[in-house]
Image 1 (cartoon, rainbow, N blue to C red):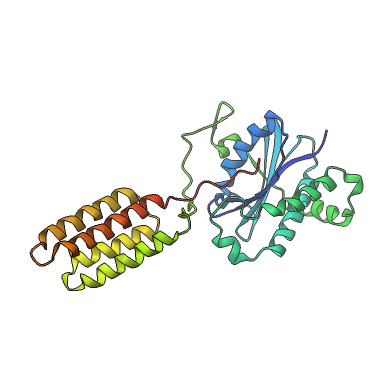
Image 2: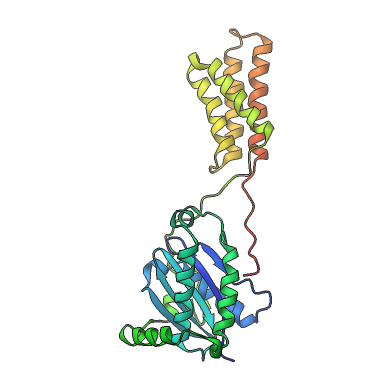
Length: 281
């Protein structure tokens, strides 16, 4: 049966999926072809703006414009002109609904999953060509395709070996979404304020004040090896207070060490946010 099976919208610069069909029941073949779609989404910036990949049981078509890619999987006998009209319709609706700034700052996959409502409605229309009321657009698209045919991709463009995705294909040098931390809790805010207070008290001692400020940074920002760095800062605070034991009484030393330990605990407890759900796409 000739039909559209899956569609998605991705960001060209890093392949981040912004929206996609939320189809709960899909054949194993479609799931397999999605692997090729995912690989191609990472290479959109290196490919022509209108492409077709055939020979993977189903056909893959996609277009890219204004930093966004619109991709689809359809049956082998689905007409090319209908496929590209379908993608063109998705493109016009998406850029109308969503602001460019919001698209550019999105960091989580499927941030615009609600666009699936439009994808599903459009799929239903294009899976029943008799109901289409876009005959003029179809004629225009047919003329455009004749004048500027879609680029025909091969398995080598996907990076496959014997029909399967090659894990050692040339890496895509895209920009990965930044990892976000969980929201700061009240104890975390208190810990940050206490660290600032300790830094102010240690201002005349330079490096000792920097330790407290760095603890604030680790609590607020996501960086590599956060836990190790936080424990290292705790150790440095303890060593500095040991060095300054003659200039401080027991209660002052205990206060600074306790604040540092509390900040380390809060840094350890504030974990990166979990992966966004895949919405069965």
